[in-house]
Length: 164
Image 1: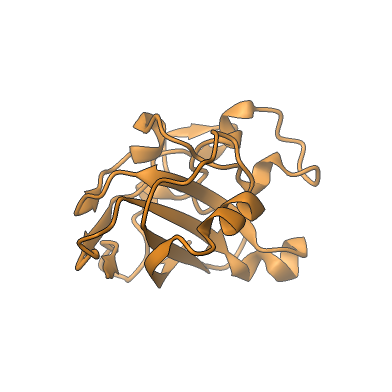
Image 2: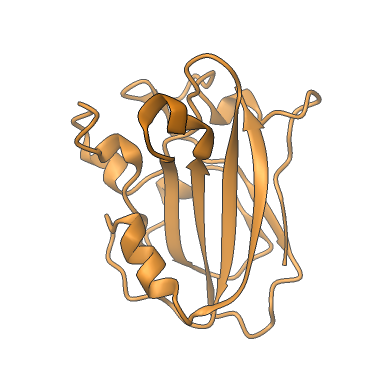
């Protein structure tokens, strides 16, 4: 499976999907970026994906989850702003952690874009081609996804996206 994301002329995720966006909620960017997909296994029933900032570990003590979704219909492009329009299960991002005081349940099931505090970070986008939909409800946790993925992944692809 091939996964690509269109970057700006300097190799970064376009500003509209990051902390530089004009469209925010609780000071977090909420417009999800488009994801281009090809060579998806023909037998795929659906897709799942995660967006995780491992560069956050020195700052937070843990990888920061920005977006999780599953049971996404198989398509060649996940469109712009998919997260706010998708009615399928999306998981909790790290803003819902007890380590943050963000009191907005919106972030229990939506994209919260890159927001590195100082220097650019690499964000790991992982896309999973699934043999069938996963039995997960909206607001699920990352560990729930990992458990359900076991034995149900036909193929997975990871890419690094740089954002500032």
